[in-house]
Length: 106
Image (cartoon, rainbow, N blue to C red):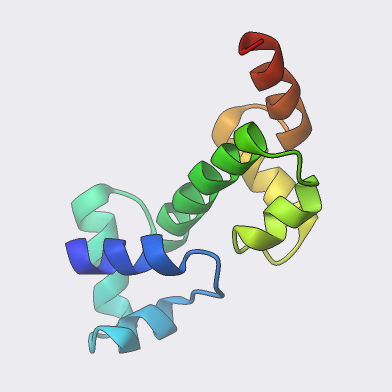
């Protein structure tokens, strides 16, 4: 499990799929899916999105890059999908998060 999490941490910006990750570790996609649900109570996609959102938060805090560039750099296929997942995870849109972060850390 640690190896799989390390692999995701290293490759989160790439297109990751259940099948692709499973084949990387020579296990079945079904087993990989169950492993995540059982050990960390998240689906593989939820876990990957969590890693991507943490990376995005870091970029939003430390750079002035556009939200669409950050979405692309963190592995989201579309900016709209990124905004939706980000808001679900943090309660704020990426833009609101940036404004809040700047206000709090003046």
